Every structure is written in structure tokens, then in C-alpha cells.
Image 1: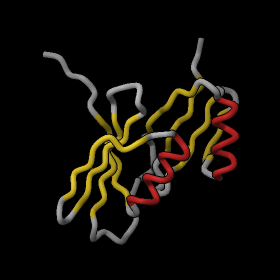
Image 2: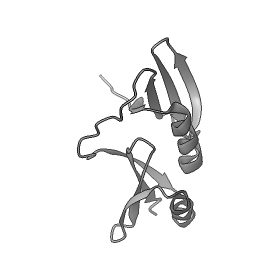
Image 3: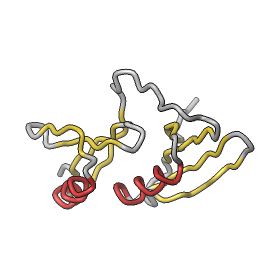
Length: 121
């Protein structure tokens, strides 16, 4: 028996705002969409791997999601760490830095944390 990663899911309050954020911050693009009367699923991809991020928009939801202590995250490797840092600094989305480890985190419009890691050689 073999299990292979397929996708991760984040629920979002404002689908268009989230799509714009993920495009600008991480260059993720829509690869698939499922429209239903009560919800929409949008799968985002990086164009390099088969892994995707599923954004779920529950159309009637008005209150923010409770992320608990937000002790979970997705991580992204980037080949130009300094340029990524400057982009995210300009966007105002850096929420935590660990300079000793050489990483930082950004927060999406719903407060989900995304770790940015340099490609290690």
C-alpha cells in the first residue's frame, strides 16, 4: 500500500482576496475549480509539483475561522530568498522571523501561516 500527498486545504472567507494573495505572494495559480451552490473549491498549484493547495469558500460564512493557536503551517522553498523577503516585506505579510534558522513566516488574509525557506545546497 502506498500513500502519496495530494493536497492541503485552507478555508477562506474572501476567495478573490485569497486568490490574489497567493498569486502575488507565492506565484500559485488556479489549476482546478469545483463550483457548488453552497461552496467553491479552488486548487492552486506551483507549476512544478503535483501537490496543490485547496481553498474552500463556504459562501454563507461571515465570521473568521478559529485557527486555534495556529501551530500548523505550509512551507515553501524559494531559490531567491532575499527577493522573496523583500516582496513579502513590501506586501506587509511577514508575521514572524527566525533569523538564527534563516527562515520567516507570512500570513495569508485568513491568518494561516506559510513558512518561507531558502533552497539549501
